[in-house]
Image (cartoon, rainbow, N blue to C red):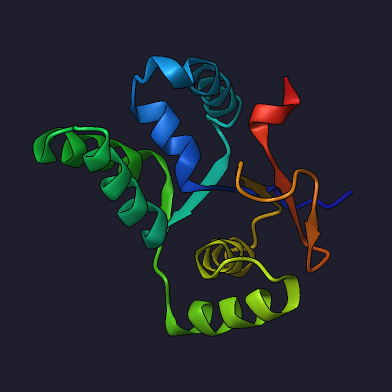
Amino acid sequence: MSSMKDKYFLDTNLLVYLLTEDVNDLEKRIATIQLIDLLHDQEVVISTQVLNELYSALLKNKLSDSEIQSKLEIVMEELIVRPITSEVVRFSWLIKNRYKFSYWDSLIVASALKNECSILYSEDLQHNQRIEDKLTVINPLKIN
């Protein structure tokens, strides 16, 4: 067992469930709240891509700009936000070619790997998939 503490990466969709109150997604919201509670004292990473996708998704959910910005301020205070660098972009190309993910999913995976995360929480990728022998995809909505 490694002595290093695990780091976790959150995909955009989970934050959307957390920050919106769509009754159709209530189960997903509850599962995400439980996950966030579990991770409250852990190192949780997102990328600037996730922040931007989150802003866009919250606009589609009819939140005002000021509501979105105040929610994102909290997200930025609570989580570790890492930039998408040219190095991450180039690495995402390798991931895309190797695993045949979409470009955006490849960018998420590349960000998680470059930031030394061991778990990527996402509902968009295959549950329990191992990537580069370093990162495990967990769909927290499948655990319950």
